[in-house]
Amino acid sequence: MNSICKIPDSELEIMMVIWDADAEVTSDYIMEHLDKAWMKTTVLNFLSRLCDRGFLSCTKKGRQNIYSAQVKKEDYLKRESRSFLQKLYHGSLTGLVASLYDGKIVS
Image (cartoon, rainbow, N blue to C red):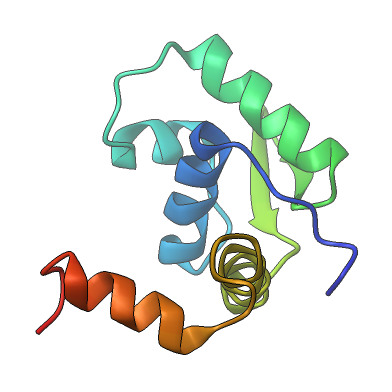
């Protein structure tokens, strides 16, 4: 899991759509399910980057590219959670919870 790199927020939004679909998807499917109105070329560019980094695989079926996740959502979230906790709270879960409590985010 250490080989999983952090991806930018915009690409993470695309990965979340794919992970939530829990199936192979097309770029059209992704565009329909994004919260943002991006140009198709932008989405295709992000998809290409995600493929280059090993997060997605792309296969051609007829005239369409079909994308599927190569990194599990759980694996990525575990890594990011661990990284977040280590960077901001020096690995202290207690520190994180205290911060959330003090900020009135949790009760």
